[in-house]
Image 1: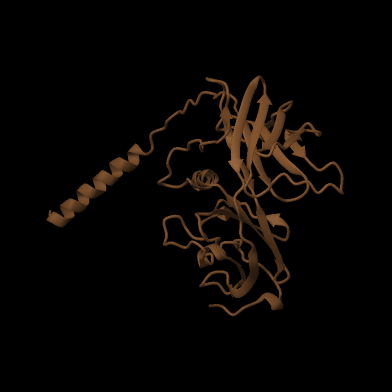
Image 2 (image 1 turned 120 degrees about the horizontal axis):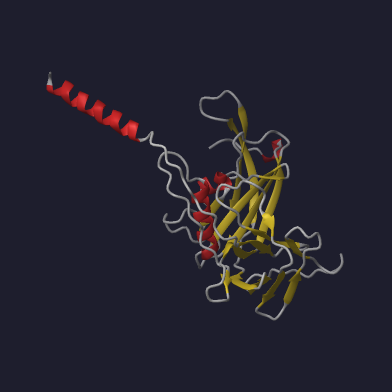
Length: 303
């Protein structure tokens, strides 16, 4: 046997053994975990109703809709002494606050203030704190007619928004976008920016958002003529940026090289030593939006 043939035979045998070992059946016996409080609390500086959603966690393989966490006491206060009481009028775990009447212009969120969340639930006391950072405005949204993919004959309109990072400090952003009023919710639609760029890139403090971030607001099939496109720019804290960064990694954790799933750290803490922990996050963000229709007036030549 030639040396090359011998090496090939050994490699083939090794591969066969490896593949056969992959066929071992493992009966996983995952014990039921204790139920924990799950908190979805992202307040803004926008007028009108604000919501905090409370549910109970379920076992890993349970795909049912999470059970609402009912009969909780939920309040939010800021460092100026204002207190906002959230109630659950529909008994569905969605705790809401809204102005007393249509003429009431009170808003919860004010840039620069610090907010505290307090939750009393099933004998446990939970708390979290977050500051509302600054945010730039969105200057414009434009569109370029392009092929869906380089090899496709199908065309669509690719959107690009323009905004400048605020100079003088590190700023963290979360960008959301809507197509015809529908929020885009794929894992890759979680768009994060560090000073308008990617974390670890060159110093972009005070500069225009880089092009990959500006063009990250596109659905898989691109937009069609007369589509309505809404871009939403939110500023978040470093802790909030890290939470969403880790959550996105977990949501995209699949395939051959996937790692074991793990809980994303929360800023919700139980005030009782040894008490049941909570999951989720509390954020307060200013929001700047721009809504544009795909039309001839908003088209530009591809670069």
